[in-house]
Length: 108
Image (tube, rainbow, N blue to C red; front, side, top):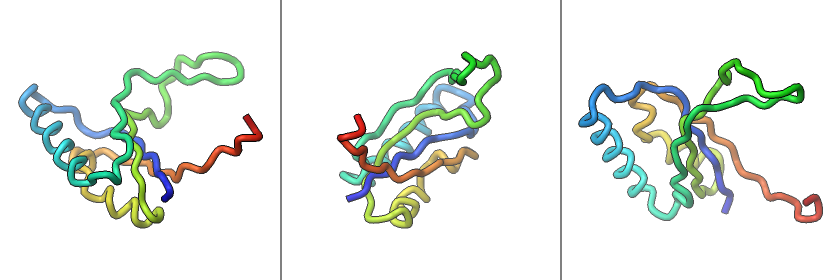
């Protein structure tokens, strides 16, 4: 079954530790509801640096990620349907969703 990586972007940060805990509890309940479709819950990420052919840019990334996760679904449409209820969207964030393609072994 195809796998899809989705990256978390933007959104409001919690105002208080209690709001952060509530948001995390909502995310965990959502992730638990996905069951085995969520093959890798991923991790949040810190500061993003942009590496170019000429070096490391001091300019912020145009679309920095906040974290990633991986899920299995029959199709892109099915993956998007599973992701429509992600709590990250309730906080004004967005998700970028991409199908992961097999890496040809002979190209490694």
